[in-house]
Image (cartoon, rainbow, N blue to C red; front, side, top):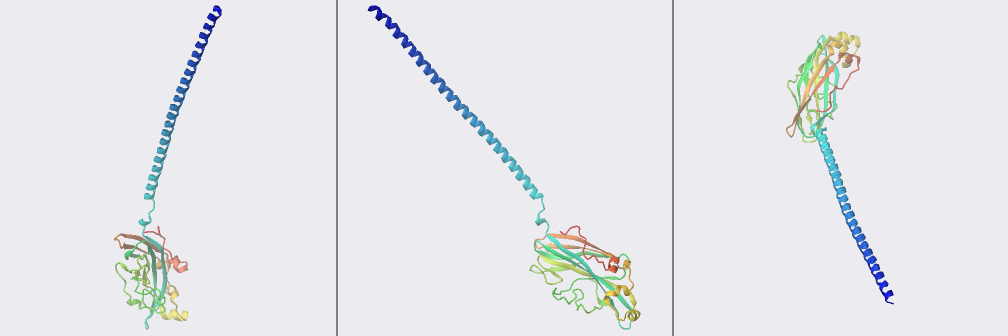
Length: 296
């Protein structure tokens, strides 16, 4: 019996050692797991910070690009056409012509006259203070006749039967000898509303710069001989009666239109019209001015 008791005690001691070893291993595993969790958590946080940093860099770069584009756009808008820089637009610029003859009772000769009517319609985007035609010249070349410049009279544009430069009924002839040529600039006063109803005035923002160039006594012919041949004379054929050639009718008219605005700004534009006498004789008249631009 004493022998059995002694052999059991070592067995119990061996079991205790195994249990202690297992506990130590379990504790070590738990420690390793905890350390691993802590390391992964820190790594995730670091990665997230790096991601956030990269996102911020991309966002800032995008903002810089946007700002650069905005600056380019603003610069482009600054350099682009600004409506405020151009205040006057040429709506139309034309030159028409007509012919006439005159004869005084008892005279042997009758005289041929012809004229050009210049009409430049203007529209402004701000109020005008004054409009004037300046530097008006006519290069006659070899054309015949005395030049007479006739500005418009104060006539309502609705009075269609009144000639705006002679101031008489259109079916009547003026005394060409008594017509006085205007010297200097042609001035148009400005009304206090948008559009003028008169030939010699402008509205605040619209009107017509107009005048007549008369070639007085450009030719002559035997009145009685022409009357005997034609039976009745007509102003329309006055050039033919005087046997005027293309050279006799060729000339150039040029002038500037100067505008002062209510705010004190001044602008001007040059106009030129070459007149081809052959076109007049052939009836293929070109009424329009050739302009480099319709803007002032």
